[in-house]
Image 1 (cartoon, protein in one colour):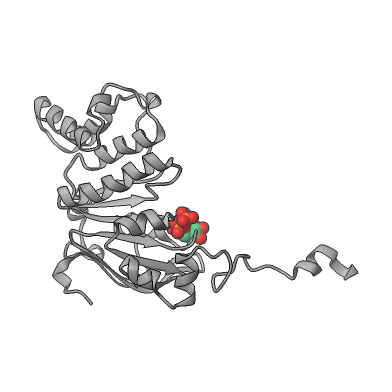
Image 2 (cartoon, rainbow, N blue to C red):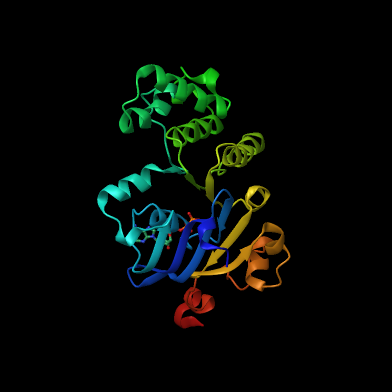
Length: 270
Ligand SMILES: Nc1ncnc2c1ncn2[C@@H]1O[C@H](COP(=O)(O)OP(=O)(O)OP(=O)(O)O)[C@@H](O)[C@H]1O
């Protein structure tokens, strides 16, 4: 295991249930500082749930989530507010405010969380928009943006408060290849240029593998694989191979558990 001080986030023995269903069963996971870490896994394995546990929007049933040395189980409201203010989040559905310009969307967190004078807000917003290549679009309304541009504006908004850590939930979904390439580069470039720690949840294997320093593969409540993208691609584990090679059926079955098909179709006639 990596030395603890190198991890922005440490997760130890995390268990989380939805009703009777165990989503995480005693998992350990480290998010190293300054790196891009990818979380991958089949649909419904709990990737978004993991981001919510890290953001302290959900509480674990057992185990610990330690963010920058602070155990979220033991933090009061004020500390939690401070920790959260160090986190940027880019959710797939992270819609922009439709009645605000691009500029005002990016300025929003600055207006809510700081008392900076207008002239500084302006400079920061223009810097963040410049970083995502959209300074020229500052006066447009969200309805005038392409999907890829909207996501870049959301990214500028997510970095407005200079977070230490940024979480991306499915950042590449629904993008054309060019917009996807732009976003992929931005995630990596911003991580390195701003000294961030990034966590990317994604189904897009090749894009995520191309920027992540380290990948975790989740399935059935467990970490079933971890390592550099090359290590995971070379894995002999059948479950890891199935996911990394995109094979539709295998140890992770294509079919949700169901009654016998023939019997269900023919009923008592069979
Ligand atoms: N509010 C909720 N109440 C009950 N169950 C939930 C709730 N939110 C999510 N779940 C269940 O928890 C499981 C994990 O959901 P989650 O959205 O974290 O998965 P995911 O890996 O992000 O999926 P996808 O890749 O499809 O987005 C799913 O089975 C889902 O049905």
